[in-house]
Amino acid sequence: RELEHAMTRKESLVAEMSEGLRRAEDEASSEAEMLASHVEESQDRISALLAELQRTEADGRSVREQMRAELRRAEGEADVLRATLRESREAQEALLSEQSAQLTHEMQSRSREQEDAGRREEELAKRVKALEQELRELDRAYVPETQLRAMQEEGKRSREEL
Image 1 (cartoon, rainbow, N blue to C red):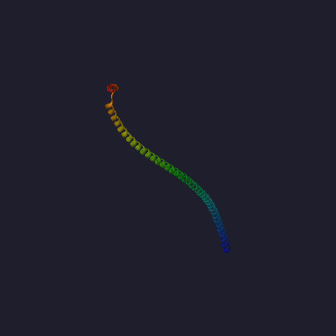
Image 2: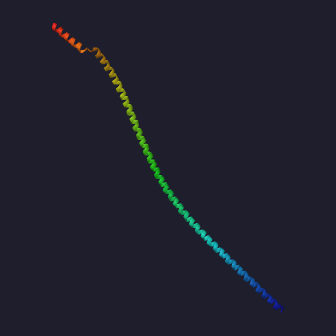
Image 3: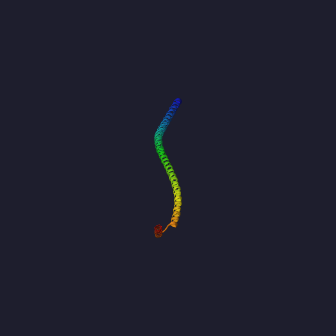
């Protein structure tokens, strides 16, 4: 009987332990399912974040490429503008140089013309003085026409008398 009783107790203990083990297994299974669900959710979030990161990196590469292309285009335009500006500056410098040379030539020509005009003016002034002198001498030597006729008549008479 004691043995039976011990056996019954043992069976009861085994049954309790089996029940406890089954409950523990159920709880562990439930917790494992919950953890598996959390892991799956975390993996889904990680996958979504990874996909977003890859899209962001792709967008970043695309934006960088666009910016590089824009930079190359802007540098090309800047080169064209610099070349145009250089050509314009060179043309203006050449034009200014040509105008300066022409102005210098014109100034030299005017200076020579003024010197020539000054010499001609001096020569004309001398000539005018000489002509004025000659005119004064002619005025002094001038014999009025009436006096000349009288002198001619007197010379005629003198010849006739002779």
